[in-house]
Amino acid sequence: MRRHDLDPLFRRIGWYADIGDNEYAALASIKGRREEYNFGEDLVSRGDQTTESFVIVEGWAARYITLSDGRMQVLNFMLPGDMFDLQTTFSTGADHSVVALTRAVAFHIPQRAVLSLFSGGTRAGAALWWCALQEEAMLREQIVRNGRRTARERIAHLLLELHRRALIVGEGDGDTFRLPVSQATIADALGLSFVHVSRTLSGLQKSRCIERKSKVLTITDHLLLRDIAGFTEDYLHLDARAPKLRFDTAVPAE
Amino acid sequence: MRRHDLDPLFRRIGWYADIGDNEYAALASIKGRREEYNFGEDLVSRGDQTTESFVIVEGWAARYITLSDGRMQVLNFMLPGDMFDLQTTFSTGADHSVVALTRAVAFHIPQRAVLSLFSGGTRAGAALWWCALQEEAMLREQIVRNGRRTARERIAHLLLELHRRALIVGEGDGDTFRLPVSQATIADALGLSFVHVSRTLSGLQKSRCIERKSKVLTITDHLLLRDIAGFTEDYLHLDARAPKLRFDTAVPAE
DNA sequence: CGAGACGTTGACCTCCTTCAAGAGAAGTGG
DNA sequence: CCACTTCTCTTGAAGGAGGTCAACGTCTCG
Image (cartoon, rainbow over all chains, first blue to last red; front, side, top):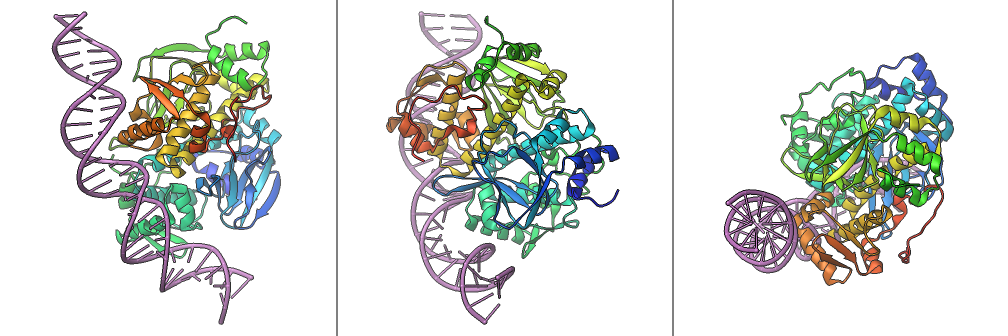
């Protein structure tokens, strides 16, 4: 199959589900309108009456909410291949915003296309359901991570999640991947101060779990990092239908 | 319309959406199997291969995750009228558990019923979509609450949410409602220690926002409590289609 | 090459946790 | 109905994880 605008999406879905040409075609058909965004630009702003869903195909984005006094919380990160706002159908205005963390490209999918695919009962529709389920599972994990883990655990856990997700869509190479996110943004995702994120990252580096060079992160000791994080990847639901691949390092004790 | 097993659900959906007899009938038709649970009993256990959805019609429940070292995080609370696990279709095992916080009654809805209603394009199907959307919005709010608010703000915020939700399904009376939840459970929901929950609740009482008597909570100063919490109820999406009622106390400044 | 964003490090402080002990509630059995 | 256990809540004291403030270093990009 030749190169396609939605390749990151196909790659992601293809990672764990066997989906044939028909399904690719069905997914491709909902593509919708292409938009480019600069670093810092909002894809969705709080209050928007949008009735569209999105697929990110290039760059990273983040969903966030700002409190009235300026405190900010990042809800989750979005990588190429991620679809979101799939169930925006009856929204009465977005209760949060989505911002581009890098230059990014997204397709805006009209509501009808999503709905008809959802209800079609096809495998492509199932893929959509699965995207929604996966997104919700990551929100839940975000709650646990921030609620019951220490700063060190949180950061280790987030790095492992992002590494895993980056690999799936073909970003990064083995243990190394580009993490185009400032420490302040990590802090806003994990409910920490950026000062403490800096200290904790340095701590992980001193423990020889990770190495950082500019925005490129290398996980130098997977087992140790997983052990620190208490990371298990079941919440990512990577085996939706037909498990095709398993991660190649050992899983932690637990 | 006569009294029905699913009344709390109807009451909740009827709160903000005009739904006629046809839609009630459609919703009623998916009822499924009735089950009773004792305090502390799991409705769903981590790892279950369930392919059912649920409606709670009596009692309270909570979705939670326990880490391997025993730390526990409550993800959200479920009140009568709440439906959940609507998108469990492609799940490969629950990544969390659901426990009854009181004696509780729930209906187990078979997957097909949910799917066909979802895709039917009816107003009853829309109600289901809306339930899923609302549940996700509450998860997001939980992230913000725990990530970027102080203990005092968190507790105030949670109390306001639970009060609001209890009112909607006809539990509680004006400013008073039954909060059948131990302080340890509140702590597990808010990422705090139960000791600090106790202190903070006492603090709110000293500030004359609330009064507690056994498990009954009275909000004695709504405006102050909302001010402390920074509470706005937009995330509850109470105006899904046809706004029917607005809260009768003033909304906070911002 | 300069400016502004981002990252680092130190000192100090505070919010929350942990530990501990005791007081109420609430369920259980005689 | 009362003793008994057990869970839940309260309060105090001490310690720690992480926040805030501030200054300086470093990257990146126009």
